[in-house]
Amino acid sequence: MDNTNTNENNVKNKKSISFLILKIFLAVVVVLALFYFGFTCQVKEGEKAVVLRFGAIRQEITDAGIYLKLPWPFETVTKYDGRLQYLESDNLETITQDKRNIIIQSYVIWNIDDIKLYHNSVGTQGSANSFIKNQVFSATNSIMGSYNLNSLVSLNNEEIKINEIQDEIFKRVAEACKNNYGINIQDVSFLRLSLPNANLESVFAQMTAERQKEIDTILANAQTEANRITTQADAKAAEIIGKGTTEAAEIYAKAESEVASIYAAAQSSNLELFKFLKELDTIATSVGENTILVVKADEYPFNILSKYSDYITTENDQTIIKDLSYILTQLNEEDRTALTNAIYELIKNSMSDD
Image 1 (cartoon, rainbow, N blue to C red):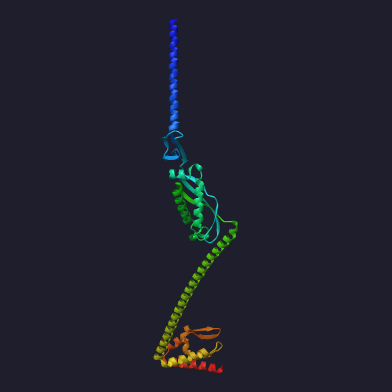
Image 2 (cartoon, one colour):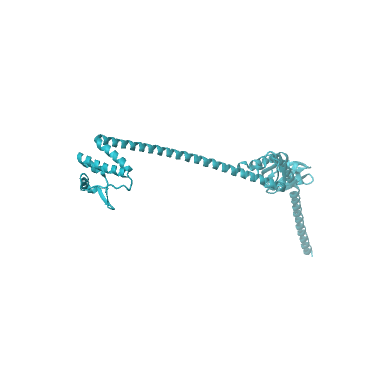
């Protein structure tokens, strides 16, 4: 009976110890859980946070990890998305320097730079997009007032200044957002450019006028170049013609000089023969094609010609002397004089008969 009681007591003691251990374990878990949730905070990758003690910033957290803090209501943690964010602005209708209405929509790439300034200026209201849009609106409206429409839309690439305009807007928006909201602006660029319906016709008319102006300039330059080429060609042609005329005159003068020299040489060698040949040439040029000279080939001095049969041919029953000058140079003085006088008399008589 005593052994039975002892065993029961041992079992009860063991159960009591196990239950106690379980309660201690649960208490430790609860304490650890309370400590974890009450005295620590976890900041994930891509997040930024501020630890607030009674509403005032005690600590800025920019790196991921687990951080200690006092439990609520002594301290609270506010977390923000620290990654790059994309924002599209609303359509902005603004006026250019030349009084043309234009609609511009931009996009912005941004992230939180100064978490303390961002929390104090923007906070948990979720109004960062509104603040950025207002800055983009203000900068775009102000800067576009210094540029004409052709800085955005033009057929001449040299007039387009979109990159310059975007850089100015970016600098102004980035400076304002960094100083006022702790926001780092990575990029501000135009997403869409359009025109109000009322301005489309005037813009198209302007583009047509610019294109026509460019065409007129090209045609004027082409005409100038054509005139220059024509002038050069005319000058070259005149130079060639002048040079040819000069050379022809020189050749003609040289030929005349050589003829004169030949005549002079002939005259000096046989003055009488020269006079006779000149008279004979004059008479021969006066005899027409139908003039016929009848000679007696077997009588002196015409029988002399038969010795030079190579220079005499017969065509249509007519005797033709091919080279009388050469034949005369081969004769002695007496025969040459007799033959030339006879031929001279025949030609002279023939002219008298005509």
